[in-house]
Length: 172
Image (cartoon, rainbow, N blue to C red):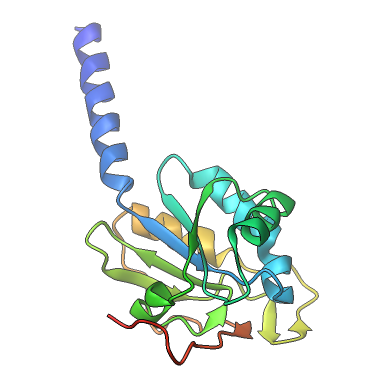
């Protein structure tokens, strides 16, 4: 009887983990944004914790970005768990209505937005950082998504560096 229970538990855990991998976390980043630099460690810690259950993407919509600057940023902040997306045509940030860096979008397997907002509450405004420990909003929202729970709205607005949108970018 014990081998049967073991097999059932393995199948159940495989089924649950395969369902959870449908959660995607996009973080819109600009290498020269001080708030993105500050959030580097938080993003690294969260990605390392959940990389087996969640797909992580670092989206770089800034015209100056290239794979050399992206790779240097990822290396500096230990963001190897993030797949890099050079969004020079800004299709992704337009699709998800992201306006600042860093901004987080959590989406399900069908690409429905479950959350769009800040990483945490470390900043109350650009240049105004709180001195107490920031919330663990990103981690809490990922756990809610993984457990199939809604992330309550209104979502807290992301605070960061404004994205300069290309006037001539291809819009689809």
